[in-house]
Image 1 (cartoon, rainbow, N blue to C red):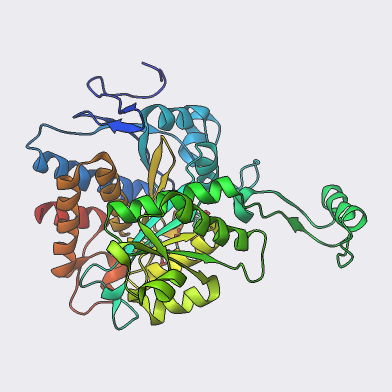
Image 2 (image 1 turned 90 degrees about the vertical axis):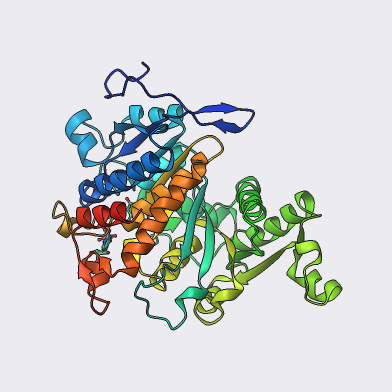
Length: 415
Ligand code: NAP
């Protein structure tokens, strides 16, 4: 066994990879991070629902060999560090995993464990589907119009962590370079913090490729590049230009730009081609509210993706249901969008739906669609019956409020 310090079920099998295709055995090892704070509540609830669905969908012939790996406070307790190499190696070796939320350590050289996991495993696409489950409370009149999938670049942009504090020697060195070598004469060298916003052609294009491939595989109608290219021309503007270029160069037969759609095709996509369009990020925030149904797959740089995905989630039930995945070429790690909500930790109170819907994405990624459908249907049925956790119950009439584990049981009962 490659990980002597982890507790690994003896009868599991490793997911294979042959010529880029995943080979999923009947009992794959799936490493998971329990998570800090409410991770100890939502992760076991997620496992209960996912395991029940897998057992039921395949009459017991398939199952998951869960392997706990450590990060965050639990890793500090057990291994004396926030993010042990063993954890990253296990995700890489076993190829598919899932994680609960993690506290961002104060000090210690790591800005965010989540960002570190994405960057070190090169999980460059953060995928966040946002759709409405009938019955969920919503602040808008037509939450059913929302059915989008965000592809957020996850390794560069201002999240790359290249920044210097105002007044530090390094900040002043960079500022002096900008002033003396680059002719930038509008900076206050002594009192300015500096961050770098790298956006590269290679990383933009691989993100856009994933977004278009996803749109093709799922019969989606459009991919929208969301950027602030009107202001940040060589980063966000380049993101837009490289996105269009990739579509033209690699998907000429199956995509059409919005401009060509109207100029050459009277507004009707030829041969069901995927329409490639772009929107400026501030406009996009309003379009999500006012023209929700016009949008389908979105491709975004890191920061825009962060803002937009939470704004979109708010329209269909909020953080308690927002789910996602971090996907690279060979490794995928699924996670909820929410954090550790420390004030609710260990109370068996919060909503496990977000992490469980991430589990649904994981099952689909494994090709176990029947199990994924069972979990999703179970959740929909529980919500339709008004059986929900506190966060949703407080916004619904006549709801039956249940605990975190109570919700998991309600879903299993309805599968
Ligand atoms: P948060 O943990 O997401 O919680 C904010 C609020 O959202 C909660 O107080 C609660 O609202 C609601 N909420 C979150 N998860 C919920 C759930 N499962 N069910 C129901 N309601 C839920 O955000 P935060 O307080 O800003 O961050 C706390 C810590 O988490 C920080 O250390 C942060 O760095 C970290 N974080 C981690 C991740 C991650 O691991 N992926 C993501 C974000 C933040 P009410 O109080 O209104 O009920």
